[in-house]
Image (cartoon, rainbow, N blue to C red; front, side, top):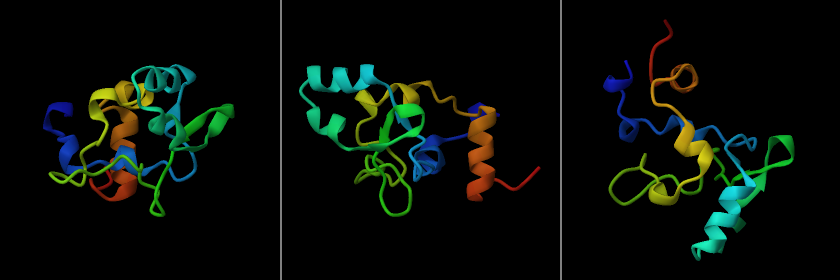
Length: 107
């Protein structure tokens, strides 16, 4: 199933952060500052569990979602956060997000 899913036609996992759920571990904040991208460490909002999360727009989408080539592509893909790198395409959570957002019909 995961092989059939194309993240660049979906992007739903990047649209679920309105309530601070796309968390950013401290290590990512430090890494971004170390590589000269303190702007990423500052584009955050309060998150769950005392962490910060990616800032979102009024629709709940990550502020880094969308490029000139694709509305579902990540602007910071090469240096994206741990939460994003570890999110598995086709995982139970991925499929759940897709159903909730209306990308896939309910089973």
